[in-house]
Length: 120
Image 1 (cartoon, helix red, strand yellow):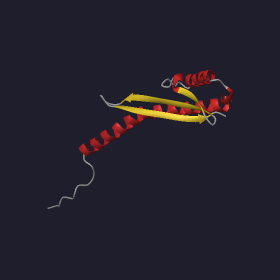
Image 2: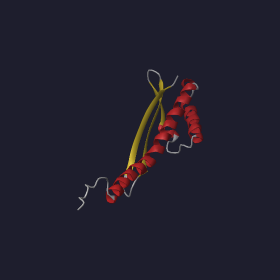
Image 3: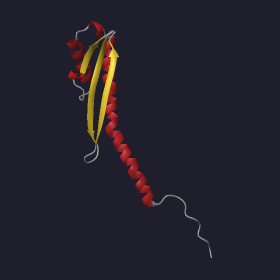
Image 4: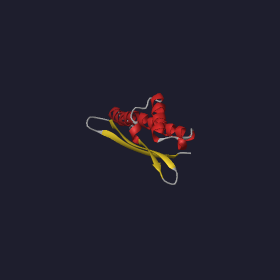
């Protein structure tokens, strides 16, 4: 008689389970990734305005310029009212906003962003 070798490897059910877990993480990344890419566009717009001479601009001019830059970048989750010019030891441009992204059923991701850029 031949002896049975010990089975090694992953079963079909185990493989499907691993694929399901990877699928959930991939879906979460697809939901979160674009939000962080938009945030990078917001920071880039803030730095662009700061380097264009934002220190000499009025707050309304700064918000208008940022609004145009965000429109070109297709960022629609941040409004010009989310931006503030803070005065202190120098002027700073601040943005605070939250984004809620639905995930599965009644679960969602809530992401809060806050960034400051000194105006030169």
